[in-house]
Image (tube, rainbow, N blue to C red; front, side, top):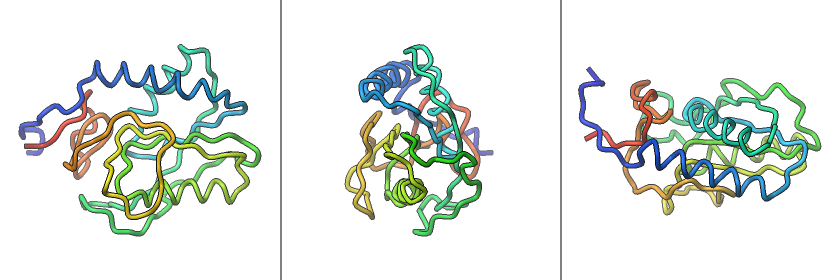
Amino acid sequence: MATSRNIKVLFDAETIAKRNASLVQEIKARNLENLLVVAVLKGSFVFAADLLRAMHQAGMAPEVEFVHLSSYRESTVSSGTVNILHDVESDVRGRNILLVDDILESGRTLAFAKDLLAARGAKQVLSCVLLDKPGKSAVNIKADFIGFECPDVFVVGYGMDVAHSYRQLPFVGVVE
């Protein structure tokens, strides 16, 4: 059973909450009018929800959309091909877009999403990731807003999973 494994906490819930609040201040300082937050599913759903609540507390009122992209499927390694499983429903033309994703590793998913929304006429497409794994990039992309630098380990929790387990954890951890 997957839930019986030991998980070492990498970033606890309190640390994540404090960083989310400071990320929102960085985002707010950009004065992004007509902001549409696009959460990249599935891994970012907890991060995106917490970030959106922090935006509300900071007086921001972005609209919210979702895109479900996958390059992993059942694996722990990216396939290199990004598939759209659910597309954004809103018109993004002329909008400021903030893509919210869980982790920037190979960069393929984030680059694909940025290019897709830019090609559809977004005014600008910025990105916010909870975790950045520098040195793992397969494409040339940098996130505009980064929660934490992550060591080169496979992480779970706070929305991230391995074979659909551990998403519910309130922290980011490493399966030991």
